[in-house]
Amino acid sequence: MSGEDKAKGFFGSNLDSLKAFERLKLYINDICPDAVISIQGSLLAFRTAAGFAYISLPANGESPVLFNLAVTNRKKIQSTRIDKVVQTAPGSRSYVYHISIRSIDDIDNEIKSLVRQSYEYSKLSYA
Image (cartoon, rainbow, N blue to C red; front, side, top):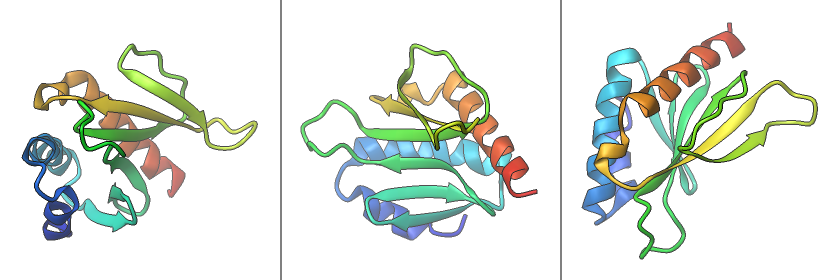
């Protein structure tokens, strides 16, 4: 996957965050082997023609959150795992879902499903 070296630098010395990222990256590579990792300021993105999964680190280094994951979708999703939902524009049918990843075990089937849906949605957006 292109951009992996940059990703390791993104996490610096935070090995727990890097391990959770590596688990997510393996899954993304399975569903989308042509995904590229890019760094845009304080945001790491998985993308093809469009981004579909975004990672940001918590502002407070002492936070129990390893990283924040954002995924997009056209449909309204209900889940106790979602911390915040943002409609991309007023009247838009596109939403960004923010999820706190607190441990490597948080990269589970529910998160994988949300990432897969986001990837599928990104293909529709740029078809």
